[in-house]
Amino acid sequence: MKPVFIFCTPRSGSTLLQRLLESHPQIASVSEPWILLPFINATKPENILASYSHQTSVKAVNNFINKLPNGLYQAKLREFVLSLYEAASTGNETYFLDKTPRYYYIIDEIAALFPDAKFIFLNRDPRDTLASVINTWCNGGFLRLYKHHDDLYLAPKLLSQAYEKYTERSLIVHYEDLVSDHQSVSQRIFEHLELDSFEVALEQTNIGNAEHEMGDSVGQRKYTLPSKSSIGNWQKTFDNPVRRWFLKRYLKSVLLAQGNNSYHSVSDYEKLGYKGNNRGNLNLVGDFLGILCHYALCNLNLYLLFNIGNSNKRRGFYE
Image 1 (cartoon, rainbow, N blue to C red):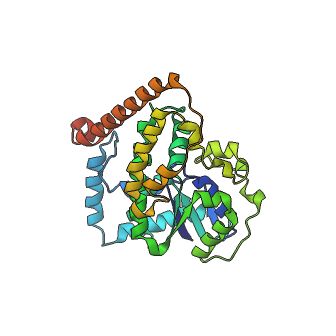
Image 2 (cartoon, rainbow, N blue to C red):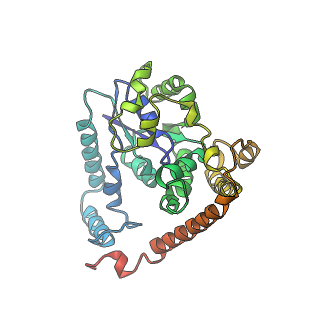
Image 3 (cartoon, rainbow, N blue to C red):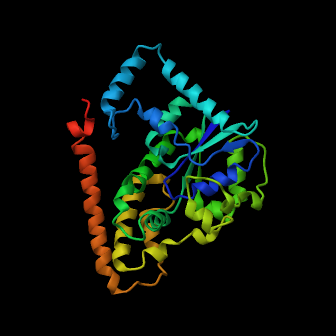
């Protein structure tokens, strides 16, 4: 059993890609495992809150690992995770596909743990990604958007850096190509995985019948087949001057962070026309206040996360 990982931001269409790929008889998969995040973070002190004091736990775990033969912990962890992937498979598949968007935090650790693993980087128009996050998890507004700061701002940068670093074992896929011609994209991926060509039948990609507990539950209900109608939906969300101002700021931040791996440059996005209807001036004040609250909450959240990280309250009660 060999692992293959889809690296992407949340709301990038990865559930569709997963459904297409797992239709191949040599690829097994389940929803979003998330299994590697707690195990890898067991040795990392950053940004973890736990009642048992995560920082103390990391110190103890690393002291224990240092007393083991060199590389034994990593070897046993790799063996354990591969055994779980195999147990979650249904037959004699060659690959287990792990699609967990927040693996962008630990790509380097995954690469070291599985030196033979294949990577697929999924890229989507950041305007559609941002609009999807706002409409799916933020009730169409900005007050809850701070909760997805890393998904929207940090993930594109980390994904871009990782793709540059692991290009030899990686394949980049654009969501827009996937929904426009899923057969061609699927064949490219199968070649990347050194699998026999496999014609993906449309009925096998019926994501409306997916039984995935995690992932794109909205897309699973809305679309029964790969659909181009999911492209360009950002125009319906960013439909007044305030929202478009916010979008432009976001694009500049993300595209500059992505560098050469972005789908377009900043100037390309500025040249693309806007065809949506304005909401009217009644929503301008509400949106503007919502955006200000978003920035305030986001900065406060990051301050609490990083600047108060050494306080006793953050480290845990049993310190």
